Image (cartoon, rainbow, N blue to C red):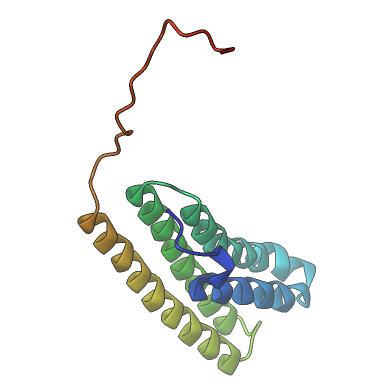
Length: 143
């Protein structure tokens, strides 16, 4: 079902950059802040890319789309945690605003990717079937 290499997907590359950046930011916080908010942020950020990757490895369009929905949900979860960091003065307002903008852009691109998969599904057969093959059950395997 893949149309190239996973690493060639712009949304996947963006997701990787986001999760690496979130990890670096959180690593600088106090133990309390890392446990209270940081671990949730890192999990949400990592989940974006992980679900895009999982989607890419799925054969059926419906499964692909489902995992992309999970990735989209993780984007919104990370946005929630970023807003908390701004209100709790863990990150500068400008850093939070830039991150939220980037996540909004990623969500829009992810939605476009989901639409492209839906369009592929519409133009492809809805059920899988193997090619007709004459089975001969009387033939031994070693011939």
